[in-house]
Length: 158
Image 1: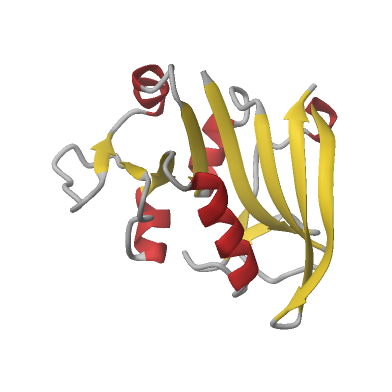
Image 2 (image 1 turned 45 degrees about the vertical axis):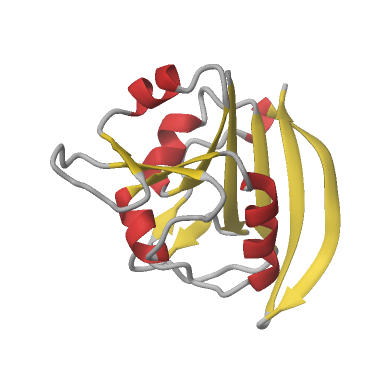
């Protein structure tokens, strides 16, 4: 199994504000699309609601506690560990939100981090990331977009 996490995080570990992204970074979204294209994406229902649609050219799995939830063009599952087992022979990309990240970190072997160098106001913090467990493989320099400075960092589990 290969489990990868894709997340954008500010220097103060903010990843969201009121069920929305607290920034608009088109270059970051383009990168996510390139990484996940033709792959399997796992996201929480709240994250799906904030995006409002599935990612095209990918298998979209939405994790929800509601066993009756149906979402057009998405697979809906109710248990994180069952999803991991179901797709154990594939590469699985976790793209949000905070609860899903926290469950995924102990199992993940890759981390694609968009690191926002500024502090950002928000009420959703990334939990579960232990930087001592990750080795930086590479990064792309500073990008400034919509008054936000950030860089792409790719990590492998130590």
